[in-house]
Image (cartoon, rainbow, N blue to C red; front, side, top):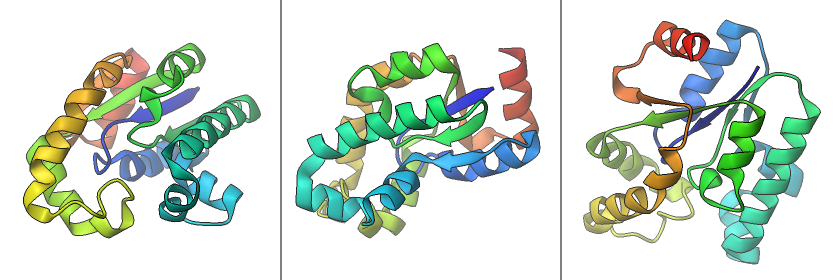
Length: 168
């Protein structure tokens, strides 16, 4: 089984993905971490040196390579992964796509604490973070809503996630 976790940055994809993969005894991958290993530099540097378009093409290529190279996995996708180059359709075709739908207030709280590690947020003043997140969520929601499952992250348990996947 191939499980793709999607959602906004800070929605808990890596946290739940690691737990789910351990519980199901299948490999876990964080798409951003795989890209960092492949490129030999952090995402922030890739964005700064080559720009977002280069990163998104690299992201698509890495997504395809991981999918073709493994029979089963849990993959934590970047927040924008489903929004470019037909990635959402590709993921739906090759596995189960789960949207971790996290409340905006929770996202704001989490992302304010870690914004220096997020290339799209690094230069956003704290007072503008809420409006930035609301706009980006609005832009991405149409892609996230295409997932096979939508789960409210802040109310989840590992058993609920596993049960929802198996019942889908």
